[in-house]
Every structure is written in C-alpha cells, then in structure tokens.
Image (cartoon, rainbow, N blue to C red; front, side, top):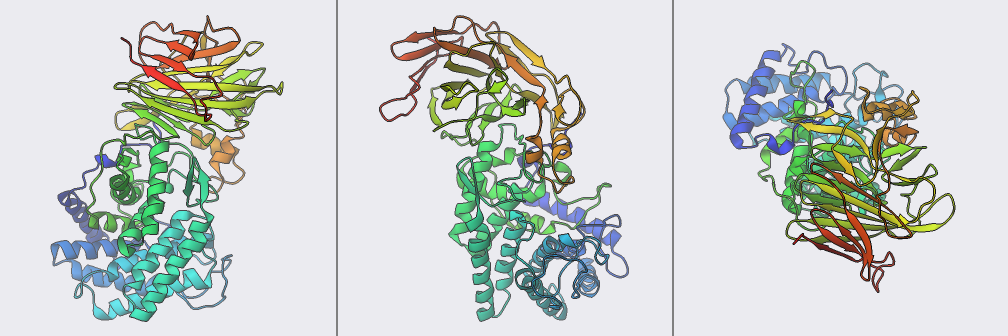
Length: 611
C-alpha cells in the first residue's frame, strides 16, 4: 500500500523555461477546450475551493499570452475575465458567515461554495486567493487586457482587500499560510494604486504581518514559526507559508520576510529526512503540498544553502491543481505564475554544518523533537516513527511500563564529525516512577549508510527494554509505501511487537490504516478540522521494536546498542575508562564523557574511525 500524498522529491520536476512553456501550453489547450459561451473556465466537477478558480486559469492565460502572443488568447482572456466580474463577485453578506466585523459592507468577496450559507467558513481564504489571482492579472503589461476590464478588476481587488482587512476579522482560521497570502495580496495590490493610497495599503499589509502573524509565532525545535491551524507547523501548509514568504520578499524587498523565511526553511530542513519524508501537523499528518511549495522551497534552498527540494510532494499536483480526472483546476494558480516568474534555481546539496535537531549524512537521518527525542528515523530506506507504549510515545528505555524520554532539566547536545562519520550525543536527565533522577546518554553515529544507536543509563531494575521505533514506511522508487519491517540488529535480544488489542487506540503497522487516518480517528473534530497530532497523542500502544540490554555492560549501567541498516555480526564492546564510557564497534570507537559534562556542563564526546 502506497501513501497517497508522499510521492517524488519536488526538485525532480524540470523547471527550465522550456518545461514551463510546455506546462502553459497544456493549460492553454485545456482552457480553450473548456471555455463555455459564458466565459466560465471552472472544472465541471469542482464544487468547493471554487470562487477564484476561473480567475486563476485566466491569470495563467494572461501569462501565456505575454510569453507566446498566441492569437487565440485575447478573446479567451476577455470572455473569462468578464465572466468572473459578472458572475463570481459577491457583495451581499453570505448567510451564516461567523467572522464579520461590519454587516452589509458591500465590499466584494469570493465564495468557497456558491450556494448561499452552504459553507461560508471558507470565504476568507477564497477571497485571499481571488485577490492574488487578480493582482497577477493586473501585473500584466499594458495592452494585454481590455482597459475597462482592467479598471473594473482593480476596483474589485481593492474591495477584496477591504473585505479581508476591514469587514472581517483577520485570519479567522488561525492559518498562517492564508494570513501571509493576504499580506502578499496587499503588497502586490499597492503597486497598482495611486501613490498615497498604495503606500497606505503597503504599510497596512506590513503592519498586519508584524502584529497579527509575526507577534503570534509559535516556538518548536528552537524556531519561531507562523502558527498553522492552532499548531506550530503542518507539513502540508508549512511549505506553502514558505512560498508566501518568498513572494512577500520578492515583491516588497522587506528583510523581515527573508529572515522569517530563512528560519522556517532551516526548520523544514531539520525535520525532513534525507529521503524527503516528513510526518505531522495540526491539520494534516501526511498530506504534502505539490507545486504550491516549489517557490518557497526553491527560493530558500538557495538562501540557506541546503537541498530543500528533497521534500516529497504530491506530484499529481506537480504543476497545478487538478481534479480527480487530471483536469486543471485554477485553485492556487497564482503559485504557478510566481514559480514561472522566479528564476531562482534549486540548491541541490545538503548543508554541512551541524544542526541541533537533526543528524544527517548520506542516506541516514534522524530528526529530533523539542525534547531531543527522535521524531523520525531514516535508515536503509525505512522510516521509523516514535512507538507508543501505555500512552507514552518516543524512543527510549522502558522500565516497569514507564518510558524514560521526557526530560527533567536541561537537554545537552554535542555534535562531532570525522572524515567518514557523523555523531550526536544527547544527554538527558529523566525521572522514572521511582522518582529517581537518572541521566540517559544517547549516542547516534552514522557513516551515511548505517545508523548506530547506543543508550546508556544508570542501572535499571526489573526487565528494562529500549523502545526503538515503529517501522512505518519505506522508499519504493518515486513513491513511499507502508511497511511493518525494518533492517535492525541489536546487541541484546530484539523483537517486533504488535498490539494485542484492537480499536482506534491501537496502531498495528501491518494494517492498511495510515498514520494520518488513525490520527484523525482519534482527533476531537472531523477529518480536515481536527488536529491529527493531538489525536495521535491519544494512541495507547503501537507496533514497536523492543531491544533488550546489551550483555557485558559496566557495573551500575544499563546499556542498549542497536544498528539500523545492513551489516554482519554486531557485538559492540562497552567499558569504563578514565576518560569515560568507551564504545567499540566494527566501524568506530567513541568515548562518552561523564553525564555532568565538562567544566561548562557541555557533553564530552570523542569519535575515531577504526585503525
């Protein structure tokens, strides 16, 4: 079973001018074949996200006309623009819309669905999208659009802006991508207004960004991020926010957009595996964006010097939005316009500096959460999620049913690299059910193909084991498919367990249920509205790799040692030395200092390749 939205890396899509000309040529042929006598360019099966879609395709036709001077296009542009201005601009309040500050304002807006009162909650983002489609058309050189139509469209765009920023509460869905998109619309609109009015709109857009978005950023993994549907980051909408930040910087030159985009880009870089798989979000867990993410990932990959294009997008939306039959949908068309206009090229090599919340080399990567517990492990093409036991989630020692991974104090990290190895030592104070404070030292070492993990903790009584992950997915060419297996070796006993109980509270990796489906089933609200991250935290137990302690550990210590990836016999040696805990494997020798660290409290780690 393949994961629906986890497909190919976005930088694999050709992005030359010739490739984009071919994309536009296909759009033109589809649009001309679809254009109704009334001028409608909407997909006949589209029922929601629809208020801006015909206008979006019109904007693509305007761009194609600008690039090709196709003689068939002027009439199509004129008819389709007339259709939007005549049929898709609403000025009477939508019955039941809950976010109005001014009743009967008369300002134009776009509807999420056309039927009055049917689903008004989506009108705010639909109006943002309509504003963005409109300003792209207004950006066209003089002579491409009928002068009277242009004047009417400018008046409508001015009205969209006022509806978004005066008649309604700003950003009512707490969706960072929508809010930044609105700011971009204001910045682009300002360039088409008389100087005094334009400066007022520009200033208001920047003020909204500072006060309504930037001031409410959420911290995760050391980064401040635009909040998305009540959470810090969503792997579908986060890269879309990055694209809006790229466009905001392109059109305004304001450094704040570049700075915040750099921060978001570095955060995405840290949480993404080498293979481009990511998981988690307050709106979707696995639904990745496609072309909507390209502008931001490409623009900021160049700025931060890392290969963000490895992000696995939904390549069915690799160029533009489509309906199930593959036919073009104008939703998000503005992103394709900007993507074609921007000449930034992909940065295709990894960043080389150490990053606190990631260890990455070759085909191996470990992404760490805020507590410096692995949130995603990739090795030998398999992706491992944190496992669950007794409603506790993570990677770490388990004793008496209690998972020792939640820190009780400062978590300290040390990164070391040699010519062929990359390592990260995490020192974490934890407290168990016995209320005893223990220091867990976790060492992660990789040569780019194999990941070695060693965990040492003060002696644990009973029958402790290491919760070592939930094997969940694996690369399968240009797709990601489900799996319940992984290539892992342990110095002690190793077993793959599955929940004995059934129901939504238990996740068996052998089932066809995806993580996202399970998370939504546990969420408080319906799919698409609930928080899957929150839902997933309600999981009682999951499929899990469980490793027993390694034999021969020094007195007073419990040690676990695993190897993710291929290899022969695995018999690491762990012993105390005057310098600390020495670990010898077939690939490296490491010395881990005292948990107290050096004179400044920093972890001590030395790493040597075998002689």
